[in-house]
Every structure is written in structure tokens, then in C-alpha cells.
Image 1 (spheres, rainbow, N blue to C red):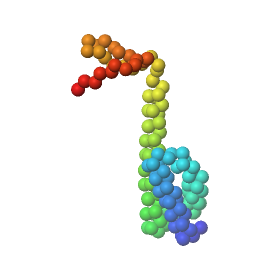
Image 2: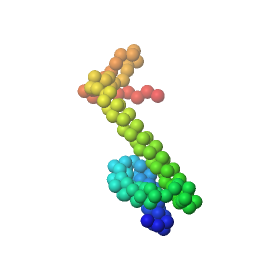
Image 3: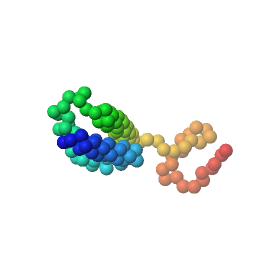
Image 4: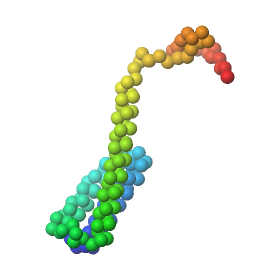
Length: 126
């Protein structure tokens, strides 16, 4: 792979990471995960190019591209983590809900007024 090919591969990987970020920010984590095979292919091509070279032998433009890829990857990782935490908390809340929870209101004297099988006669007070 030449330096031109490396530029093409880093541009390809950056495009994939930007697409992944947009999908994550719009809540489409499943679609973002579908980009994994393309992302892995681009990363393997870049790694193959870098395997035979010293890190300091890369042109400054290529090092800048690599830094951008690392930054985008970290950002996307944080978005994935936020989605995972949100889903975990939603699952925990759903698991903690149970049918014996009281749903109703209270009368003026503090007595409970359940909402189950209640019809009409609700009074609104300001």
C-alpha cells in the first residue's frame, strides 16, 4: 500500500466513524453496530500498512489523520457507553416496577383513593 492508498484508507475510516457518530447521536445504535465489518476492514488495511514502518517515518499529514481517527473512536466509544448505560437504567426501572404499586390519589383527610375501577366524580381544585 502506498501513501496515497493510506490516505484513501484513513479517509474511508474517518467517513465510517463520522457515520457511526451520526447514527449514535440519533439513537440508532443497531445501525451503528452494522458498520463494524467495514470499520474492521479499513482498520486492518491501515494496520497492514503500518506494520512494516516506524511510527516516526509517517508524514505529518498521516499522523494528523491517525490522531483524528483516535479522537473520533474515543468519542464514539463514549456515545456507545452512554447508550449502554441508558438501556441498563431503563431495564432496571422496568424490572423494579411491580403490580402492587399504589396508583391513586388522596382525599382531603389523607385517605387513599385508588384509581382502579373508579368512575367519574373527580374534582379539580386549584
